[in-house]
Image (cartoon, rainbow over all chains, first blue to last red; front, side):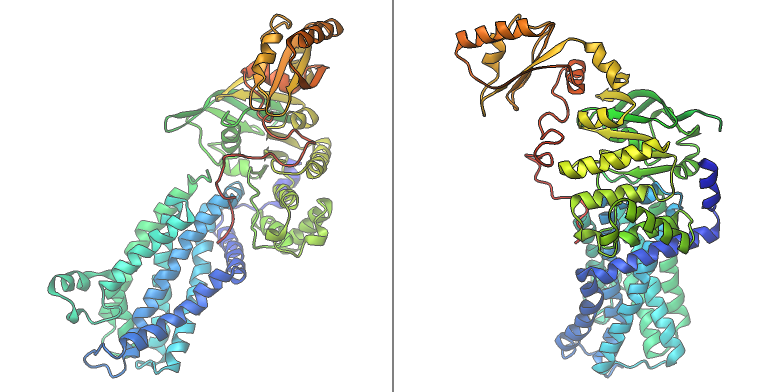
Length: 269
Length: 342
């Protein structure tokens, strides 16, 4: 029996098998995404609402030097906000999988730990691609335009999705650590809310009090939103994009190994 | 491998903070047999299974599955085992078929082989009609069957079943016993934990009784019963009655102290012989004026073995007995059911 089994099972450690298993887990997570109503609402309705509500509530009050339409300034920022909100769902999902025993099942299978986690992040990256699409569509309907050409527009969406991937790994780590879906959701939202409102996401840093400006200027969200604005609105992009990628890379360097290690020892009870 | 043991554990120990979950668990299970791990809640059954299934590392001791070390050769062990957990670990938002196909693909089966295997299992576990429905629409019994089916996708030679029938109604329990019995006949080695004596008695070749992280007895069901010998006198008070006055009436009647389950209103007394004891008991009951709802003289059950060994009511005794009225009621446990996606 053992020999029959061994013939039917391919080696799990090869990079090809890890990628294959990641794709299988990704497909599973996307199916769930499409079937859980709250998940769908978070991925479609919420981003569109964020664009419309912020544009009409703040648009009249906020005047940004050099910007004619507030939506042009807002959209890159609110895109990061929506992706940050969405990333908290990555932590919720992994905590749910831990609680339901799904992770026990996966861990008893001959597959790499990284496949389960990467499959989660990849599915959320696909979701973020749709989120970005919905937001750009909604923004365009009320006046948003890319001003730096199609290549920069593609780069902007790519940067937004890359940001989401880094946020997702952070939330994956949080979700594995707290192991409770509701706590994971809150733990994921707090940093996003605090960092967003102390950054240039919604309003220019220059309008803030001096002490806050000091923080806002080094806030990674300011850096990432700044790079996105450069790609959407035009202007020098190399330096802001480089800084944004450095932040994203650093976050990944810390969170990916930590999440994989934590996952290996994760228990359901 | 050449090893005739499906599972071997040697001095397994594990602590969770202050709690010593396992305190030197050792046992050996020959290939092709069914081993029942029996013990009260918190005895260390699930911890043992989690260590053997490579989900948890022991603090001390070693364990092998099919001759492979569960810590050092964990990836190889995972190819040989199937695990069905205490909670039905299937994806609620995937259909029955999708769940099984996904597991098959993760084991490295081709798309076609995974589809065929899923079809076979759905048929065998009587889930073919529900194959296209999301698992969240399944009844408890269906989910449990799907979970066991998921653990069989790769035809593992060693199967771990952690309380496989907990929460099933009597009909579902008997149906699952039949399936597990068939698997055992086909040579699958199984380790199952259970809180039901009847389940261990029915399925297991060998029973290992654990209590507070230690093995306190092991042997075939027959051996364990022979070890405690004699007969059992069982009295049940009227609903809500206090069994203690009854126990006083029984003083000196048995060969050992009575075991009193105050919550269930039940007393079990080991006795040497049959009819004479009954005559004496009848006299005493009449004299005392106490009334009983039920009175029985019977051969020792596995539950009595458990009572004698641990000195406490059997793990399943406070709940509905197997074949009785529905799933065990978990009074005083307000936690929501795990695994509800929200």
